[in-house]
Image 1: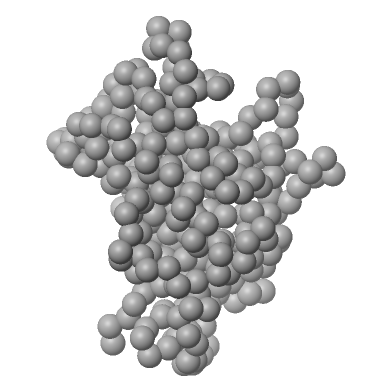
Image 2: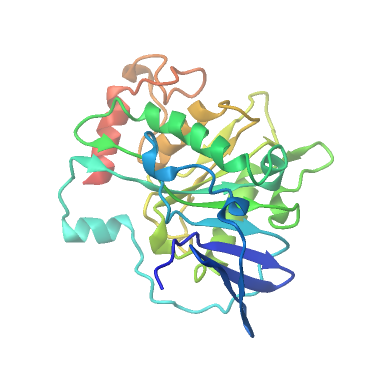
Length: 296
């Protein structure tokens, strides 16, 4: 049967349910049973026509993972998935293409999700990431075109415990990102490493601050295509209060992930990779050079 794969993985009280959506309904396969339900496609937020869109790349096979409760204990073993890291790329000496398509796994925490619902969260995410994609549209040789590799949505507060705010209504972004690396390693059979180049966590909860400066996001530098099982500081996390607020932060953190550090004084002022208050759309020549070096 030819499926229109939605790839939804719902986790309910230690049972992983794999749901494949076809035009004839939903085929649900659990550990001990197979059943067919005639559930309309709209219930899974596919009211948006992905095929006729401009902006960030996303399609009918883009997986959406709806999570409830905690992740079950997956067996820890090597699944044989190829690790896509920079050493592999350098050894193969792959020429830099005309267009680079970074595949981003988007992770939505519960506190952002509850501000929307099953029907509105996907259109919001597409609008948000369209804006982020436009930040990269000025780059040439190569061009950058962002692609959504998948979307993980936490539908209750217990999915990611490190995202539960403290009494001060804050979380530690570094701890949250570290725990996400562990979570993705445990979930690698359901969400293979080879299916995405990096991930970005979106949260409405602010970072726990130790100084006077408000941090809106953190990420690892030059960590695209490195697996969560490595010792690298992978992925990124951004503060997204709603609407398009946070798109500049997303572009900035992806800039780090793609190889750019903060602009130094000799790079010029007010570019996107400035430590604070940079231009929301312009890249310095320093950042552009760093992207080229990372792709070699």
